[in-house]
Length: 470
Image 1 (cartoon, rainbow, N blue to C red):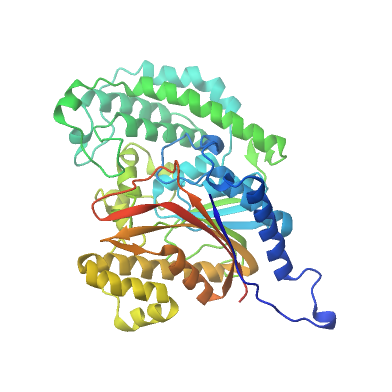
Image 2: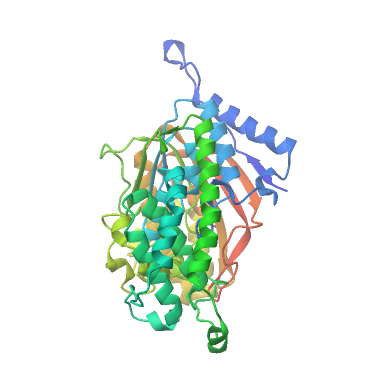
């Protein structure tokens, strides 16, 4: 059962002509009342195992820790209904783009950023354009290009190629890659590349049971007979069906014109702890934030970068983003190193003291971890510090009275619970926002490693809803 917390109201006194037609506090209350009513009507709504996780193009690529679309969509609808001037939405840790896709049905301008080129590719494909008719019409010609390709040339070239791919698999993947390059429309090429990314994941010698690169046993590799071309054709049919479903959904909602979304979609390959992109180049731009930050540094929680490393070796990076280069693939851990807490550095004492004063929860956690597992302390400190830097940037990009939806999870490190929910709340409130609602939901299906040697993730996560007041 979900835990719904009502947050004490902050009262402001207005007089005479200064009083707005709708006080922000009144809107807060209306949003909270709608969430309460929905929960009373169905007390398992936020954690329901019946939610269709294949909706909103989730099936394209099995990206780690994808959010549940219906949960995000419902909260977005509640906020827009009560604050109808909401127009521009930000996800600063967008991953596979679930939050942005959920916003598109409501016609919002969507802005997202991530440090992972594969996240950019998947989200670009999910947000369109949706050339369903053209893809269907070109299918036989496209399939024929790789079916009739007699070349044994292997297109990928990186250290460990033969470790991670049998020659027979590499040859077929290369045929598909060459066929994709002959397509002239970038949006259709990206659709093909995403399918190929999933095929690489399924046909490599990497175990699919974990996000970290983990080689299969030699005997299993030897006996494994798998055809990337067959897998590609099968996955293609599933993906085109999903693309057709979602484009029809947007069309019926009057959100498509000639196969393209009528709103703005801008995706940036950049680091949120360094900057938040706004089209004006200034802050005070976004009306809404919908996001789910990492639970900890990628190397000890969910290795998004390692999970993306092999697929990206087969994809033309120039089709993803102008800043996507081979520098992202220097090592299997390069992308994860660029994430929050990915680079272990010494945080100066004065900066630590500032963090302690802002977040008592972080301070108490620091002291516990220092006693229980001092060897893991530096990773946690670096993650929280980088998270703090990104929150500072995020806050300045948001308008006054804009709402923020944060889906956050805690984890255990060295036997100590890291209360991300409390730490994030304190960091955001320090910047000038108030928490208006907290929903705790059970994680039933979210695809992530619940345990590894360094950290254990919890089975619940919290949805924190804030409003910026300063």
